[in-house]
Image 1 (cartoon, helix red, strand yellow):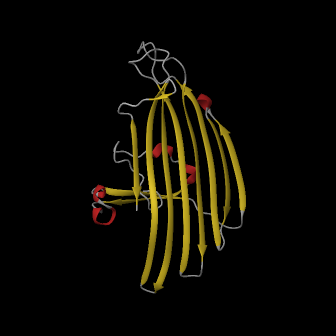
Image 2: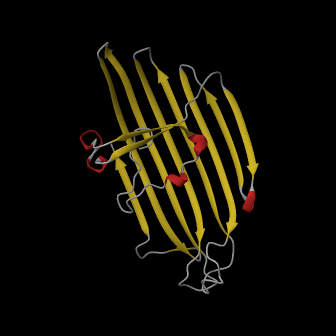
Image 3: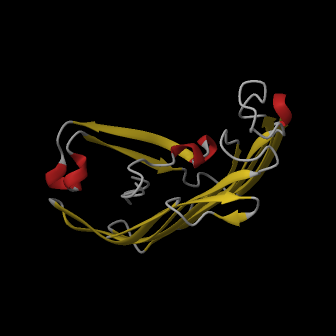
Length: 215
């Protein structure tokens, strides 16, 4: 779950956690054991919930960039604020030129080019507190990942890649009705999408997965 919204894939059976940038994560909570009565039938073994960062302190802007081995490049921009209205906008871009996913000496049909990874993601959180007991929060998150890989069963000139998208939208109202009653009403949608490509064209046979969770 991402900020209380399910983002798991009902078709592939896994969640593309590799597309969540650590810079955007504030904390991770793990609930062990059967909690399906609270979170649904898939929570028979537990729940992992990821919380994205929130604004803190006076309005501020920060940016960073870095580079590493195998052509790795990284850039980040963020606007943070916390007051009656708080918002946080983060944009991250990770680019890895990489190495060949398969060794052509071991797989003759593998493309010898370098296979890289490119990810661009953004998150926004806006919260308005009407008073100490009532607030309205709107959040949005989107992560787009592009991954290149090799196949041992095609042609040495084939270019194989995949696109993965994780997104979330939510609108929540938090209300403390009295000292013993705290309620939260949330309208949300999470989406997990996966698509394979070959030589720039979508692969249409058994390689497209899309799951939308609404709550």
